[in-house]
Amino acid sequence: QVQLVESGGGLVQAGGSLSLSCAASGGAVSTYAMGWFRQAPGKEREFVAAIESWSGGRTYYADSVKGRFTIPRDNAKNTVYLEMNSLNPADTAVYYCAATKSILVRDSRQYNYWGQGTQVTVSS
Image (spheres, rainbow, N blue to C red):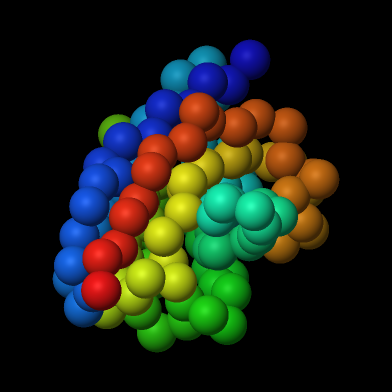
């Protein structure tokens, strides 16, 4: 059973940066595709970014974050990160990390394991 714990959320001004961490236990992140999703109030959960398993490590991004967010993975620390730059108020949401064995990394229904979420608030 994989357990995921996110951290690093908080309040930041528009244009600023934040780094989220997702620490895993009970399984190696290198063997899972790892994804980040977010959910804003009144909206459905949406895909943000994902990284494939193993050394392939191909990354995927939602159009809304491409060029601003990156998803590095540290296998030694069993941790995946979401590096967020040039934040704007539209990025305000609860951010969740998740793990899957599926190749359909943009589809939240493919993820078996989820963290509890961390709040990111971007002020204008």
